[in-house]
Image (cartoon, rainbow, N blue to C red; front, side, top):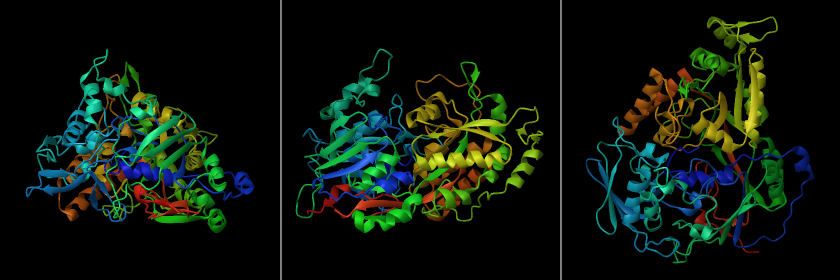
Length: 589
């Protein structure tokens, strides 16, 4: 799911190096390293599923190709946290903090050789990201203040573009890192309507689009795509970056994404020498650490990983077409904050750390990553206490039958379905343990891993789900996840509004605490003083832990193995191994 939009490029590149990878012991034991010579101009990685779209504006999931194929005006350096130029050469912020004028680099070009100009920037924002006819998660991160006004984007001259907002907005500069797309290709697709009255852009650049028709500005362009097999990217000959000797970047000619059936297969391929990098799961850290020399790789440790993993209940009390989204009996449980607290007390997170993460993780108690300067270190978690959980449930008029099953006050058995994405062994293990943990307080959990694409559709479109385990990426700036906390945000998963084009929902209720958190995110973005901002985000974290729309689980350490033949790796928990991919080199034999 997508979160911080300056970090789109970093997060998708990082996905390839920090995707949590597992292997069955029998498979690992039977593997042997193959040190056969590698293609000296090719970097090979693995992803678990096919991309869902080649349209950067519409993308809501991972994996996607856009970290390689597009750039924005600015980018965040994951080592320093500073905002640095990308397509922009420089920028000037007005004294009243209400406008920024960007000056583009000269002689920028698209991958088809056409000039990349200020007109492309204005088009990308005004006609794509800010266009209400086009659903985009990016729009939420651009909204400013209580009015949720969107910025005004206008051309100043042939090299300069001006962004104007109605009030100070602390993440303003960071929010201008969205991918710039080509006006000369897409303008007609936005203005032309299909039979349904919607822009044909909504169906443009799908995964069936021939790669040579995808026009990009990033370091790489898509060369080929074989469904369920692989994607191959090749250097964009018109990419703007050059090294200090004026050599064209990137150095590596091709990047290959092998689409594998499971994380087990990924680690087998890595150990046989067929992949250049892989995330190191805590379960197999000690084993792989012993293999570094023989396998000719290095395990990089970036400390606690950015992002969060959580369990959540569907709190939406609305109906669609006369049918409640959630069984009213279960909805009553889920919307009882003390029920959610009992669940939190029943989950043994220390056991998760020790058994699933092999000690290489820590309990997560906040929506904000522990590495962020906005993290509230005073937040207290829900330590494992099943007896307290039972006491809370009994106080809420739940009861137990003679077999120890939990019943509500109308004698309904407390039972629900818990979903996660199949193939992610960490989440599958977390779900299995939660099923066991909750059985200790009499709750039956029907745990069901499903395909990631199906899960995304349930969470965002059909809204047909009861509980799930999923993760969100994050960065240093809390506003990057504002669309999770705004009640009308596109990623407000625990009480989702209808997505554009979906049937309306009747009777959706926004709780007072829910609205309060959303308003605090608005205040936090408006405040420019760091200390005052931190106090605001401290309150959001306290409310999130008090009302538990998301029950946070465990934050693993960021570990990845990278072949020693890859030169220039500067690993970080935020950017992974390949945040500076365009500058990496492959060591010659």
